[in-house]
Length: 144
Image 1: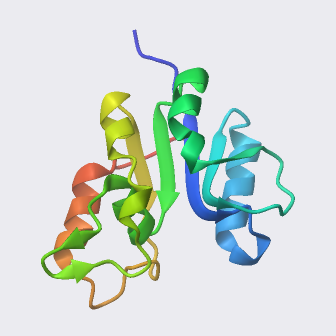
Image 2: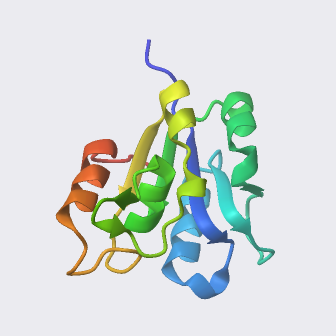
């Protein structure tokens, strides 16, 4: 029997209306999937239709809310969450190893989904290996 899917969205500074598309993308995810749980590395107080938890509470919320899928945007956050943002060629701009949730991804068999927009660590000089790591670890689609 297939388990019921439950989405968590992770962002760096959220909700932050000045972030533009990220705020509105998540606003509409909340509208389409009101059971989505939102997290931020640095929670802000801008109005948002759902509670936004600190990423520090992630594992407790995964267990209590039955999270099965994680969604984030940008290469730097994706690789940070995977703990794969540093290589012998350097690190991805704007990434942070302390944001890794790789243990939780493995422990709870979570599926990671991402959108890699230009910016956020992705530019013409980004080493190909970083893009390959994101592609290897992220699922190919996410149904909302």
